[in-house]
Structures are given as structure tokens and as C-alpha cells.
Amino acid sequence: TLLAPNFAVFLACRMAQAVVASAMASSRCVERATSPLIVLIQVTPIIAYAPAVVLWLKFGLKPILVMTVLISSVPFIVNGLTGLRSVDPLLLELAHSVDARWWEIYLRLRLPSALPSLFSAARIAIGTVLIGAVLGEFFAGVSEGLGYAIKVAQARNLPLQMWGSVFVLGAIGSAAILLIGLVERLTLHWHASQRRS
Image (cartoon, rainbow, N blue to C red):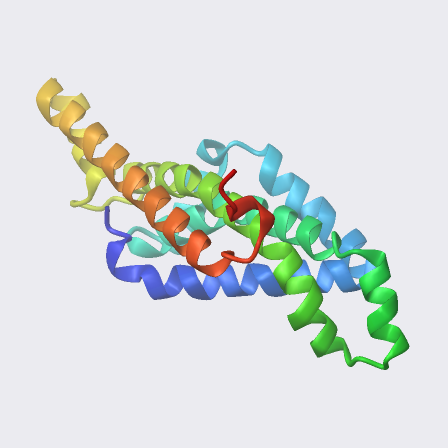
């Protein structure tokens, strides 16, 4: 798809989503303020607001990026919030008893606790990112990418091009899942979920 060269943009967006989840985990006020927006993004079908995003940002790559970020942000924020709050209360009490600073608690307790949830969110987000990219390419008036290839195949009745594009999307998703699994095993080698029985 057209998103391949923009990996740095997606990393920046994931970092921003981690910041949002961290702010929600540390403040009930922030959580109450942002939760309605997150729910709204989650329950609104992307195909409903895709044309509006294109009208707002014009044709090209920008609306595709916005749609993919929107559709994949909810799993990261919700799972990140759950993970950040899943720290053992006894460990938190111990940290506070030795006057640990907030960033020490975050880096040594909250972040390691959230990583398994974030990797699960990453697996879920692979599919939603591809959906957002393909739908974005349908509406954004681009002339390249797998979404465009599927649109052309449908308009011109080209089943081989259609199924070829579908299989390539499946291969991209599968490769991304395998890569996430590898990074998870390397990052969480200490976690119980990575121990073989």
C-alpha cells in the first residue's frame, strides 16, 4: 500500500497514543474527558467518516494516514490503559514507601506491566490498519496502492487482479504479525506469557 514509506509517521502516532493512555491512567479527570471521544471513534464505522476526512484534507496521502491512525488508535489506547493500571498494588505501595519518583514507577512498574497488552493491541491493529489503508485509497483519489488496485479490478471485472491484491494484503498482514511476535519474544523474554510449558 501507499503507507509503506510512512512507517515513521505510524511510530510517532503510536507514541502519541501511549502518551494518551498514560495520561488517562494517571488521571481520572483526563480519562473521563477523553473516553467519550474514544468511544465515538470506536463505534462509528470508518466508511461513514472516510468521505468527510477526504473532503477535509483533500485528495492524497493525508486522509489515508488519518483514517488508518483513527481506526487503529482505540486498541492501543484501551489496552495501554488496561495494562498501565494492572500493576500489582503491593508493588505500587512498596514503590511509594521508598519515595520512588513518578517516572521511576512508570518505567519500572507501569510500562513493563502494559507491554503484554500493547503487543496484543498491535496484533489487533494490523488488521484495522490495513482496512483503513484500503478504504482510504478507495476514497482519497490516489492512483496507486493495493486499495486502488482492488477498486480498478472491481470496476473493470478483473478477478485475478482482485484476488492478487487480496493475497498481497494477507501476506503483508501475516508478515507484520510474525514481526510483532518476534519483537514480543525478544522484549518480553522475562514475562510468564513467553515461557514455554
